[in-house]
Image (cartoon, rainbow, N blue to C red; front, side):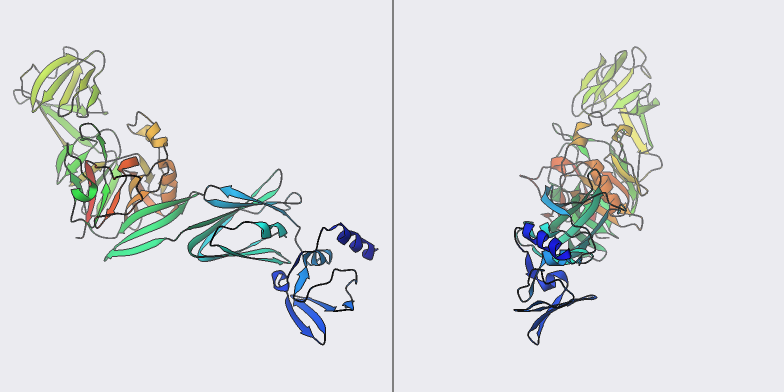
Length: 489
């Protein structure tokens, strides 16, 4: 009966699959005219011209010296795992292999992942002969072994970072393997305690980050309102320069808080800011006190930009004020006009809005009017960005909590610039390849960021190291108004 079953099995096969014995984890040798194949707890003997030695069935297909028949080993029950079909394709950067399982998985296996430089080896817990038909990427070498416990896959690709992700799917039962051959990571010392790095984060898709990591140094905001330049030209002697916060593209007016050496250069706009003294950095909504001084020296507290109050100062070009208010347009500390709201605030001016007919003190065209502001408590430096990405090791991306009226720029896939640091105090100035801020937040969490804040992104996102642009850039780099410069202490 077994002979007939084997005969039927092989008569239905289109052809034998002859593979080197080593592919099955077996060794081969010739001894006294016999071909001997041995492996873990198994031994097969074939005598040319005679057939298989006992106790193997003589109907088994013959080998060809060191090459053995996959079908014969399957019929003998050599493999302890079921057979799975194999499909392949691409998924983003990944070569995706899908193992179609013969039935429901008896015990669902949790997802797994791993990576290695140059060589990667993993064991798929199924017999998967179809894997020999996979078209591997150019430059990659693949070695496949069909072992009793599954299919062993060993990949080799010099100077590449190899990564895999293995996860099950149900209905129907499948096992999915995503394989990535990525550019190698980079680490370049710049100075004691400072290094340039190119690293991959996985969310789960790979995202490349270009960053300067510093354990020491002096961080300074650089630039000048109303003027634009490449970040490297804003700080020509800096070790590294990252683009800074937002600005009005027409007038180069900075948008958001900017404190330089304790002096307020630009006023808050309702977003999270980076605030620091020395190398002690903080992130949060700045506590800011703004006052206006009237014609006779009177002073009154006012709201500022998005932080509205009965009296509100506006410093960003665009529409200001609401119906039922009046607007005092101020240029060079002189009231130019008092107009009904809303009004368009031109570049180079600021405005004070107040209820119609109720200014904080008697006020008319030509009167002096000044705006002052300070951080509370005071800090030496501050630069507003946003949105917040990571707060104390937790995902914190929520632009609805900040003054972002148009969500579309934050949903676009574009290069992202950010400032982050680890719990141990290592500072990161970084630019990512195109992604979204939410994905960047998860990527930074996966790398161990404790706090992280997005700066201006898109075409402004630039990281310069010793005068060289290190992140890939499409076209010519964009001049910006502000930047963060890292100097050696």
